[in-house]
Amino acid sequence: MCLALLPAYPECLQLFCILKVICMRPDTFYRRGFTLLEIMIVVTVIAVLASIMIPNYTRSRADAQLSACKSNLKNIATSLEVYAAEHKGHYPVELTVLTVDRDQNGYMYIAAIPTCPACSKNDQYISSYTYGTEPDWYALCCCGTNHGSCELDPNYPMVNASQGLLDGLGSNTVDQNFQPNI
Image (cartoon, rainbow, N blue to C red; front, side, top):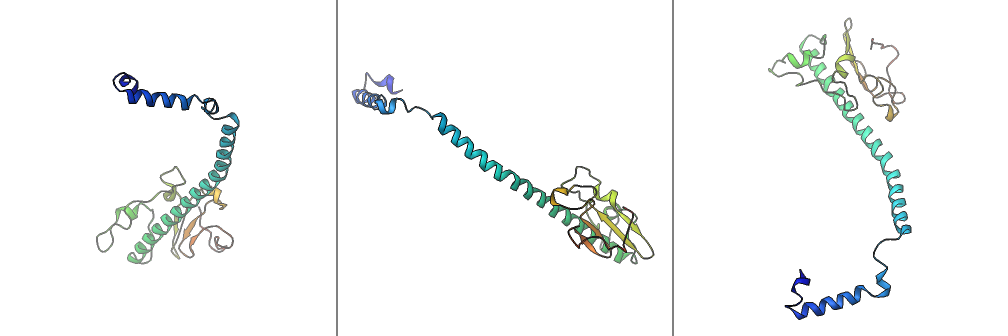
């Protein structure tokens, strides 16, 4: 646009000539881009940063999924305990009963059975639910090795009527006297 105005405005012509002289100086004439060495250094730094960040990101994501799974199991366990308290200590035959039946105040025990964020199956918790009578008990787990990246044993985390939430780390595993069929 300034080039079109050059004949009409002599100030623009002078400015253009000054800029042309500055740009054509020998020390700046050849500095129009990055050298190959500079580009290689930048790429190397980015690669090192990526190699540090990606494992941390995946570990953080796996830990967040494990925390969400534990929270889901605690919510289901709370609903099971409320159901049992209102049904003379008996647990439901299926988990889906919690979403259909209503408590004494007319509310569902749980709006929907949650799913594990680390698993692609929607019936993850429903298929693992087992219960028994005499005495009444239940067990529920996150089936398979969905949380293997968190160094958990298969079928953990787990929640059961006698021990609560078990995450499978160290001594926090299933009591040997308590063995439901999962």
